[in-house]
Length: 280
Image (cartoon, rainbow, N blue to C red; front, side):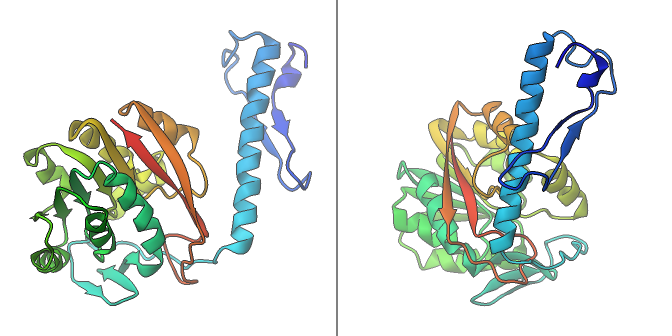
């Protein structure tokens, strides 16, 4: 393209089935990217469009083999209400918080967080799946933060039966983490406490973990590792990567495949999820 208004809008139709999706960028400010040479500007715009188109094609392919999922009920009040747990799931205030299909994922997150076999912080006890897996990896000590009173009581009962030195701290991580010191590994797996948090941290942020990253960086020693539930299918978005690199020196990405969420799961639908080890 030449340096004319024909550059805008700029569109791309790519993928294995041409014409399945058409993405377009329209410039609303004449000065946007104007400093770049037209050839370079066209190159970077096309790359962005091609990346986005590939994301959509991948989403479509995964959706074809994933589960339909179910409508997510709004978080009534907050997640400090009554907890109901059986072998398949944990419900708090009627909201699905954790389910047993996550075990293979939790195994990998636990392996990453416990890789130093040092002192580990787990934020969110849930069904206790990752707590047991962390200790099976072999850790020097295990600290658990749990906001829900019912779940915290279950965590304390669980900790009493374990040989590893374990402490359970009740409360929201925002209120208690600064009193807990530093760790060699952190596993973060919590859920929004209300609809405002869901809108801000799940819908608007690059990743739900983003609001926790400053605290994680402050409470990991040099070389310490953060792992967490990513809600990414097979890679990390650029926004997600930028958020990580604002607080961590590096990260590695893996994928856990073969996940089997039930058809009525309200919070995940794909058969894989990316895993991250963020290094302080």
